[in-house]
Length: 105
Image: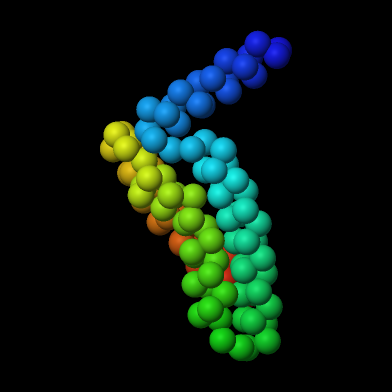
């Protein structure tokens, strides 16, 4: 089992070097951004229920959601086209999903 984790770690590090992206930084950005995203969505829902302005929490939620992907797009080199297509589709689905959830409230 330990050999499997070493193999995965080596593969991720090699992939990061190939595309000039720091895998540890990308992973940290991903985790922190998701925590911030959940917090800002919570503030958005709280403001919606209180009938206060929602633009700032919505903007901050969108920015926090996109930080790791923006890092990948800006810092990455030789990224396959399918990764860019996947990122765009993920943003579209994420926007639609948030809109549906907020619309229910």
